[in-house]
Amino acid sequence: MEADKTRLVTGGRALETTGLIHRVAVPDQPGPHPTVILLHGRSGDENAMWIFSRALPQDWLVVAPRGIKDDPGGGYAWHPRERDEWPPLSKFDQAVSAVVGFIEALPDLYGADPAQIYLMGFSQGAATAYAVAMRHPGLVQGIAGLVGFVPVEVNAAVETRLLKGLPIFMAVGKTDPYIPFTRAQGCAQTLRDAGADLSYREYETGHRLNAQGVRDLKDWWADRSGGQNGEV
Image (tube, rainbow, N blue to C red; front, side):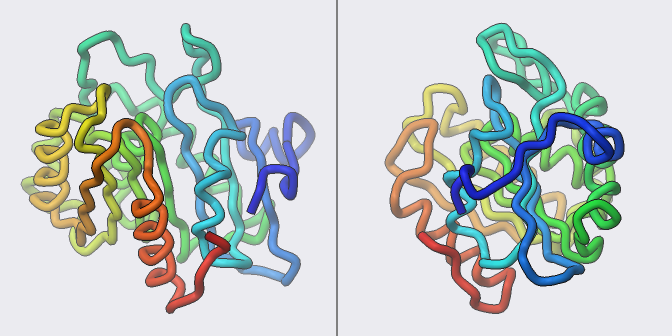
């Protein structure tokens, strides 16, 4: 699914109810629709994640909101991470609130199925997805986290196993210059300790997903849909 097959929303009722500028692809058939929210990384926007949407099951509702803050490097962000900072869960609360409000508007607006809401985030977008799941257990039914990180200071989530049984696909680049490999491994262990059903994958790449990663991502999404494949 390419961005040119989608609709950009910058105003009107759809913006008023979701609170975020977004790009959306609505299936032709009537809902309720299994739904994936795409959360871009730092300096991205509502267009950045559509390349990964080709791995998604066909005929799902796909929506990509724009981040809530202007990023100093251009584009937008969910959290203005400082250099060498690994932000705690509490610093994602504003982003979590925005994403949760966005999700809650989707059933009425686009026919999303509230029982089949998934998140796919890249880098900082993955961190935001994990924060949403920890702050609102049960809201989403799965997360694909691509070369991202888990917020720190999540002891409560780990101790109470807030992510118990939540399917998570986690892709890690062994030579990622932004998310050190050892930190990524530690983040994976945090998700396991919090109870997630983690599908952890390491790749010989940097801050990106290589061809094998895309194939693995496609297979993981196919499992979410009972074997239906996307376009990749």
